[in-house]
Image (tube, rainbow, N blue to C red; front, side, top):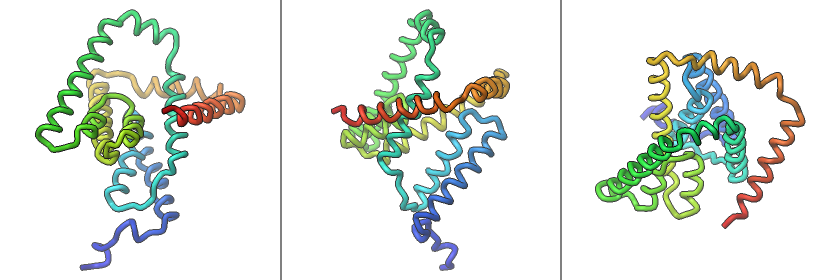
Length: 215
């Protein structure tokens, strides 16, 4: 067997693995961004990280850094919530309620099928098929004794499928995603200042600290 066929990421030092992961994640995100893929800077690094994981990489994200990342995502989600968004949700509450109920019911049905026919433990199947933020589901599943590796695989495959289908639907209906993204970037960047950044970091740190103390 040749040396190339025996190559594994475990033969590299942790520093080299981190450097390769960061470099390739950035390249993958930029490549997807060139093709106007929604959430390109999310999908690209995620796919690279999955590739590193199945290739035997030994590096692991520190738990505190993972929690800070979750806090950052939470702040970004909160930033997107506005009075107009809440009013829109209130105006169409019946449609959103029906969609939510259908999503939960279908997810539960898929989980039951996996438990019955695939032999997956019930808690792992429940967390793996639960709709919601994938990173939050993975983190909570580990706390409740589920296999976080299987949960992560199920959740992120779902994320990839949803984003890919969303991109295709947006393309075929002619939604102006690129123009909207450019307009949003142009509007946000000039308003960025150190005070807002400091406040955001303080909220993230406080939220992570308080959240880690919850039972």
